[in-house]
Image (cartoon, rainbow, N blue to C red; front, side, top):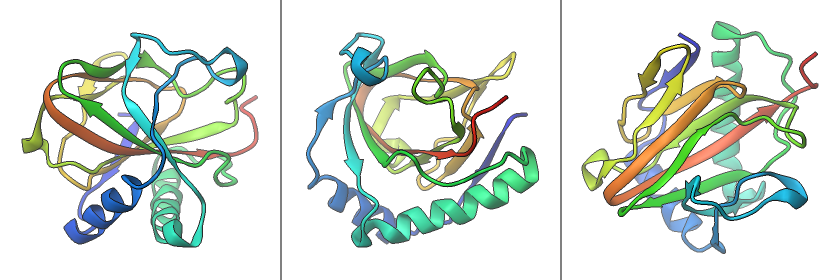
Amino acid sequence: MNYYYYVNVFTDNELDTLIAMANKLPKQDALVGGGDASQKSDYRISEISWIPQSDDFAWVYERITELAIAANAQMWNFDLGGYQDDLQYTVYNGGGGHYDWHADLGPEMSNRKLSCVIQLSDPKDYVGGDLEINNGSIVQIPKERGLVCFFASFTLHRVTPVTSGKRISLVSWISGPNFR
């Protein structure tokens, strides 16, 4: 097992507040590739917004940081430094929203150590949209609303197609010195 998750660390009210705040931010189609090579692709179909490291969202960043430190101490003991990227609010719509197998590392992301996915929507609100991790065998992460899942950023993972409804999640990456 190369993942660690928490339940019941955000209340329904906090999740509703976060969704309402994030829905006011500019949205864009999700891209793949990174840097100047980023492009729209059928490999990833979703809408994203970037949640700034501002006073309005400080409580979210602080909560994720506390959980990341604890999970890292239990599982990986990576050398962590903090956030290089803003949090990503991601919406996968029914009719095929998904993100195929990928890792959260690449030429311009080699310092990402821990990836974090927070389930914001109620699993009754959509069909499909499973977060799966491939550790040599495929593991399906529970869909509980508010679940916070950490895994090493080099781990292959995907979100299966959402066939109906809407899956909403928050994604973050905790960075540190490059792997050697």
